[in-house]
Image (tube, rainbow, N blue to C red; front, side, top):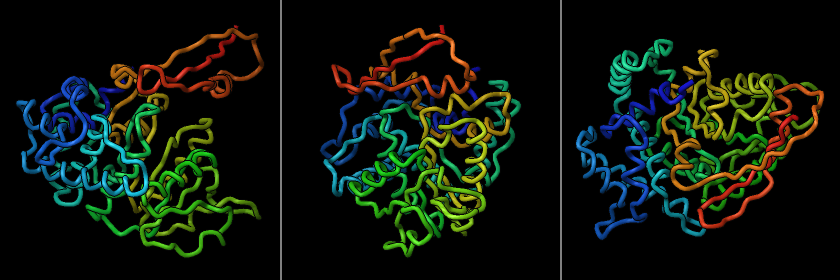
Length: 361
């Protein structure tokens, strides 16, 4: 299945630069210098302004977006060793900037333009199962980005983008992770970026009052339940009433039964709010056999820097295949448990990951 052709929101954003394939942007930008020129403009925006004949975005708007992006980067460099965006990180943030600006300042026109694009695109690509965009489809932006491509930094910039455009004043800001280890890691990274954050301590009493109106609560998905029964560290989603701003890191890491339950709870949390979602594994959940999920992400994945693009930029994975005897577990359990990350090193390429893959003999 060619998943890429279903990513309508992503294809629409590519069309604004007069291209239909991410490789067209990749080829122009991957060798560009990072940082800014003598006028304070990023080299990336200069290339986007000058190298694409069918550009549909006004130059002054692109320059405004570039100025905004530089201001966000300065904010997240508040306490950390300064970071400079790579071209694909810049594009991810730029695509989000375009969508958030349209949602704030011209939502109905934006919706019309999306559906006009979808109508023509469906005829060319034979994707009749994707229905028209509605306002409800525009409450989530998802980033399909390979492991190691900087999703955490993108999330921190998205935080500042959201408040720059002030889509609404969130009653709660929640950063959902797959496990406690990643919760702790995200909490520490948010602090480095100067973003007020709190780590869920295990009970309602630990929630207390936010020390800042823009404070982020970091919590793992497994702590949420529909309805709390007895003690323990779980938290009913009804605690977070109102309009929530929700960030989701790798929300699909689990068994199918767990994923369905978690998706229901996440949707309840974000029913009246807005979601930013980040994953390297959307390709594992998208299928024509599940039209509802496919359509949801076809309309919300705005940036695709999945592994195939990551690899073309010189990042890669080495695999060792070991045969083991047959064991009495299901195929799904085997796949979930036997793919083990064993080593990360940095040779000549920026990120080099080695995997051991255990195969049934």
